[in-house]
Image (cartoon, rainbow, N blue to C red; front, side, top):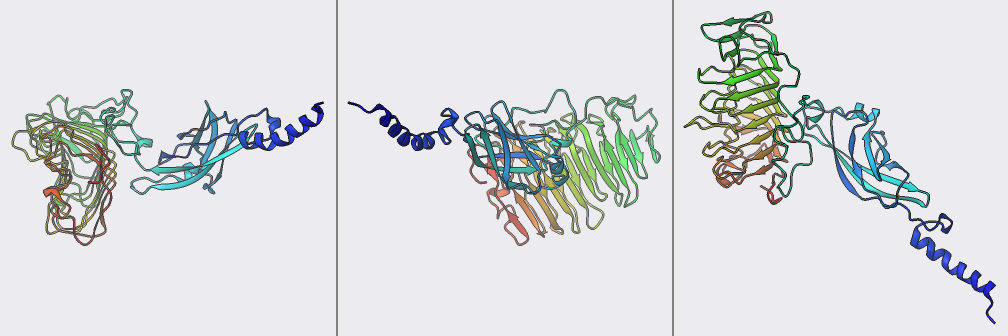
Length: 444
């Protein structure tokens, strides 16, 4: 005769641990499974924005809540459940702590993220890298980024948000342009009809002007303010047309030039660069440079230690004029200048331009230079010579790092002459970090 009563007890004693092992919790939880959190790496941006989504973390078995249990003692991030995913967002503390800008340095936090349901909890490591990539302060443009699909086919791409690809640059929507030849200009500025130039002889801010479509046609901007003063240009439109007008230029021994949230459109025949500075410091941020006849930016400092910043810009198809030898940036100066070229995008599709990308040319110079976290794309054969041209002079605390490039359209190399040493980088004072070929993920 079978003793059913004792059989049930034996079955329960044997099965309880087994069920707990299988389901990860107490059998009284109807046999449910605890959440399994997916380890992943997320990329955030700074300056941070309150409650901005840094990224989604996958988790199975329908978690009902989540929390960050380690790796975030300052409380920069929060975790909430939405649509079955764990959402990592920026807190008010994070907005304060992650406010970096004008730097290529990355803030990295290794979080432990825990998800919970009625059966228990599960945890995993989630790495968050925060980049000062410019996306937070990008202009508002309803049409979106200029080149949103150009990286879709590559094996790898940069992990940060990319100027002109993931967010727009240039002039924001809603700017009501003024004609600089007829409208009131800032104090210290005036229009010279004979030269077709707006001249500024003292510190001034030029905002919301269209230098292309004026009553006098295309006109330029010329700065002669003293060293220590600054000409700031923002929300403005420039052209390089058939009249050979230099769009923006500073005189020898003049002060600084700052250009932000603006656009330059070349005609393809004008050999002038967009900005030609022989004054002192220069800054370009959120500028869209399109179809320049030759170089985009040229500098030749008259001050001993000029400071030059290029970030969040889009250089698109320079060197359209026949016979030009174009570069995105050509810096030929003396003294001890500092150049920071970070988080820019360059895109070359026109054949035969022979661009040398970023080019530092003066042998009489001691450079402090950073070229980092730029995206350089030359997808068609014969569109460029090199991404980095030949560097002359000596270097101090300089680095070239974390750039991503498609070099298919070059003469076969990221570097001038085919190697780091031929390009002039294998010297004291220069550190060459990892730079990545987007077609296959290999090092350049």
